[in-house]
Image 1 (tube, rainbow, N blue to C red):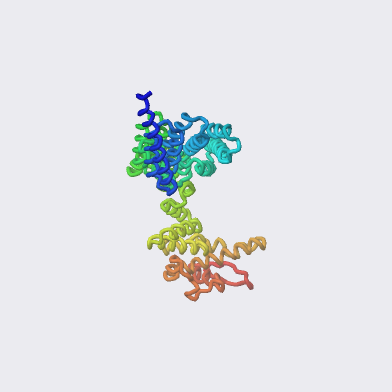
Image 2 (spheres, rainbow, N blue to C red):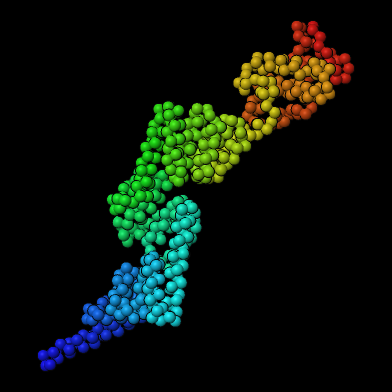
Length: 484
């Protein structure tokens, strides 16, 4: 008996010292100095490694420090030492829940309720764990439906209860990337990589953001790194393959375009567009590139359609608006051209864009006037002789006497055309008026009121004289031709 007494005294002394350390830990915990509290609880455990409450206290401290995996180990040790330790089960459940394992959390909270069925915290935490399982289930279904906004919503709700769950954060980040919210997605993935640089899922998401932002070469580097960490990472494997294929096709298309092989460039850009419909930014550029090819091939309607697809994917894509606007100008769709140039100028107020808008507005204004070239049936670069010949032909074609036997409706229409032909000749045969007309200036400023214009005077002046037509009236508004 005498030989065992010192050992018993040592054990009692150890317990007293451990309690002192625990009390000191409690004091620091109360002051929210969790690092010091952790140190003293560790000392208590070192003195008495089989005391469940010490592990429970250290688990609570680690939870406050956000170190949930370490806290989970302590909480589990506490209930192994004492299965009736309710707070131990609560802390184990809380750690499981914080790390995103809602099913394991439910088991811990159920055990706590078996020990104390009236425990309000256990009841509430059990409900929280079930809510997280429900959010997971909904998110899984909505991800399959590609309802990424709903998934982000579910993950935000789940993360309120599971703030340390990397899986939920990664799923949220992936969906943010799919929604084009790249900075947010990058931020989430980067936070995880700061804590765990080998996290393949986070590396994949970082690559995905770069891929969707058309930084394909950098994206491939992240996908390759993710595959080094997890060779069986299916998403990273597919994304890496798509990125490399997209980069190669786009570069081949660009090369063909520069070499003037527009047919091949069109085919290559079309093939590239079929690789990944989710890559909005790159596809917008590919549509714009193909639109440029179509404009070179003078397939202007196809070029407009491609540029429209580009701006549907990326409504900030200035180059696509400029390309489409030029195609609208070339097809004389001036209102549409003005609309595109206005969009461009609102975004980038440069002198060049201002001039392009001004030119389109001028052409629109000109298009709303009578097209005197069209009325005479001549090109805008027609010579003076061509204009005279065209007037001669059209004036004789539409002169009222030629249609005196027609219906009143036809006569009225021909009289209108006869007057327009005279107007056209008056403007286009006068160099000064022609210059003003071509530049889009108002002709009224020249003192020419076309409303009071008499086409018969022009006709007489043009056809009068030896060898021409003489023009005589046989009654008000009735005329006949007589050769001189």
